[in-house]
Length: 166
Image 1: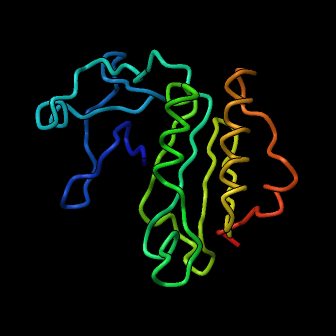
Image 2: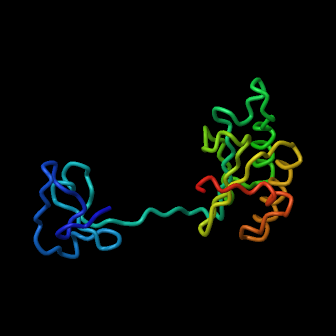
């Protein structure tokens, strides 16, 4: 977001909001100013509060079953979706390590992509082509929950590390 003359938004015609010096009640988050019209249109209160959750979420595991991943009819390895959901529930992982069965995550030339996200990093895994890898992800998640933090991935899983942005 861009801050111009103390405001977050440009007008449709390209000119800037001219709210003058921003008062403390006009500030939101990292010192951004919310123009009064935005308060009105979007129902934004004058005081912005960060959104919080009562859960201690230490990570999220997103498993792709999009256009390519898990599409056995197209010759791709299976993704054990129902087994993953059942294991996640039985081990009580959902509140601390969220499991998302996702649509397409991206690098479609690599089958069966898994994205592991924490507050500090995102680790992409690709070509998770064996049930044993999914079992290893579940075991790692259970150990991480017990430790109260995301533990390092095994060398076996790290061999599948993928950088989709290079």
